[in-house]
Length: 143
Image (cartoon, rainbow, N blue to C red; front, top):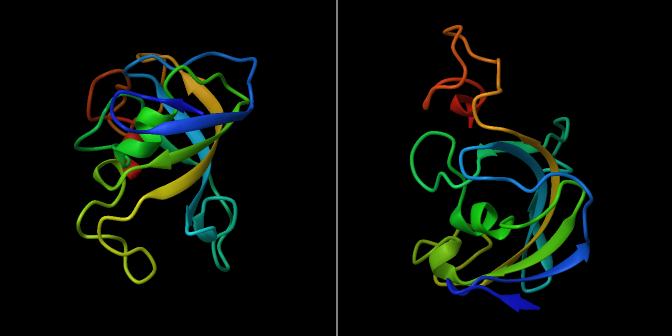
């Protein structure tokens, strides 16, 4: 396992062959969240709804389009097509609030993350305002 300075550790299960995300790029991932070996949540299955990957802006840790730091930081240097198992300390996951009902406060959790796509910053044409490359517009406003 590789341990990052921020306390996150990961193991690459599959090394991808595609692009590596850079700050500001829009990425999509499939993820599964585990606590004590039990799967808590997954983008691959959602009860009754079509499974859908999540999209977010890489390097954007706050505000519109941000996901929890463990997922964002966890794909650092990952290539499209890769699958990585991440172990996240509480401060990079759900902190002192936990995630009710199944993840208690101050819990270390695991994620399996598959990096599906990387769109370079400024190349995303999707936006209700007809602009796409500016911050705070476009696809990541949905998340």
